[in-house]
Length: 420
Image (cartoon, rainbow, N blue to C red; front, top):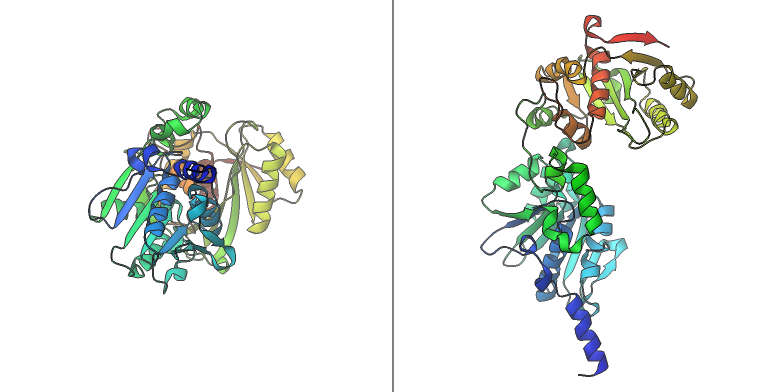
């Protein structure tokens, strides 16, 4: 073997995945239509999806593969050009050429793959494919049922070749599409905890994640790879929230409120910032989650002012238990014209949330979009006063409670308010 052949052999060995894959990254045997790799962060889901697509493309010159990401940007940056993406995992001799303007990959043998965004379901109406890789399906847009519409259009176009199959990679999220695929007879699920791929992850990362999240609900989902169902005793259920999604028309908004739950410090909890409106039919519409993480008072105050401007808020409601006059001063510094009210909580977060949860049960609240972080916190608020959701505090959910209290609940149920 000459020097060049030896170099080529060594390079190919570096890109030969099978000896290094752990069981959750290996395609399952049998006659399945969908292989869902559902694991914790760092489990190696992206590499598993890329290697499966690569194996199809290199063995079938006629393969036409759909690559569907949450957005076109993520499809390119993660699935194609990412550290575990298709280009990086392919040896130079079989590396596909990426044509960004056409959203297309072409392999030397003629196989092709095409990029799509789950936010644009209609882009999959018409094109035909033999295989598909769908990445982070738990993150696909839920508003107006886009995730399911995208999946359905993909299935209807999966009619080339003789053995049409899909690999779907995702961190567990209890969404309608993930539940649907998990329950399907044609789906085989593999996956597991982040620790299954510990050999390829920094030890400092593993230690830090265990220390920070441990056996919390968020840790079980994001690191343990568990699909978390509704928590018994929670004030909100996933199904209740899913059933209240609508498209909002700004012309129907009679009054708009931006509510703020300020953090106790810049290094502590997030600053919860929620925009909501009351519509002509008397229902409340949750418009946006504008919350910011690890923000200084100046930064979260600017975020509040921006949200108030974007949504043309009639009132900004801010909890002032932490900081009092300081809350008003930093908000005024961001925008002296803010129509500000300070509210002071005399009851705990869960006690304040219970009448708001009842509004959802009565069908009086609608979500105009999918607000994953907010909704995870809502589903972690427990009757009886505890919190079992992600993070140390339900800051986003608390801001939601202030907004809906201001919009819908009578004065006898409102917190004490100080006009500024």
